[in-house]
Length: 266
Image (cartoon, rainbow, N blue to C red; front, side, top):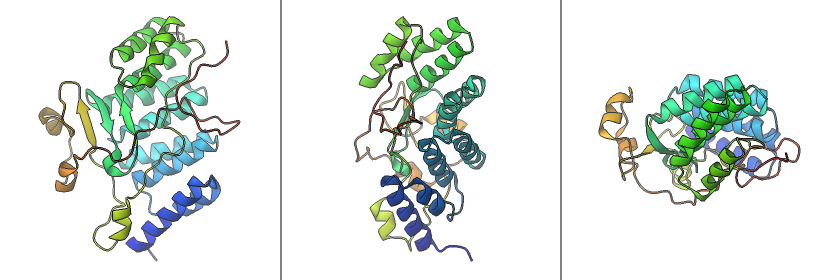
């Protein structure tokens, strides 16, 4: 028997509680009971990655993109897991897809659909450049890093210049920080009878390089290929939670909480 909306959200909340307590196996079991939207599949991929199970993470991220082909963050995290598996050719393709779905925007802000994360073009380009360097395409890789440096936004991005000087040696990829995943708001949990919030995330806020407003620009709306709902079009409020610094990667050995990109020992 299908879960009711109330049961879905209660299960989601229980899964998040287990995740926050680092009871990852329980979190995965609970999420597996919920119908597999792109949001839920992305959460499961993030949990597998936190466990160091990057093969399983890749499978979930791919499933998420099959349900929502515009979900740039799922391509991005799929690339992170493929990079950590040493599959640099596949990681390159993932980051290329993520960049394509940024659609010439500098930033995509996922806060309004429950993910406390901003995907930056600078980080996608940096990650893609590292893949090229590992594929022995040094010049092309450094070019990506140089473009990423021009697009830097946060303090964490200052590391890009140092990576260029060191020709990418000893650096790893930007990633969603540990502990970040899609979460329903308290308001949604309190109003479970009013609307189904478990659906696909069709459109999220973006910040154009030449536009200071949130939401896709006029031409971008024409090119998106999907019509945004009235609620999505109205979702222009600034994030209420602080953006957590980017992580370098998920540490498979220690599973320690990362804070920003790091450099490995030479």
